[in-house]
Image (cartoon, rainbow, N blue to C red; front, side):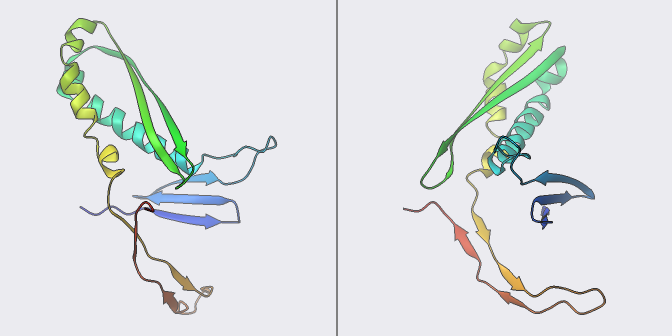
Length: 158
């Protein structure tokens, strides 16, 4: 199954993300205090990780059979400078239920399931980037020819 997301940089400060006829806007501008106004790229990555982890957890039979109240994931990332990346992620997930002992008996299978969420698995995926450089496309005119770069595999520097 193929997935497709478009990220379009607009107006020097916005990125519009679109997938499956849905869009969200993230603002890439500093706030008055100098911090980011929108989400940082690392926060977006952590949001995706949290969304997937909670979705995988809540899809488990043990969770569907239990009377569940509030479910909260607090996710912490530790940044590394060279190469710049999140070096570790910790998700602390709290599940409130009326019968904690029954759900605790299923804890090993729940832990194993959340460690197999697609987002968690994808953090180690092979990645490629291909850049194309083109002139502006004008309404009613054919798209300008692009200078195609080679696909490069993204890997951590040695």
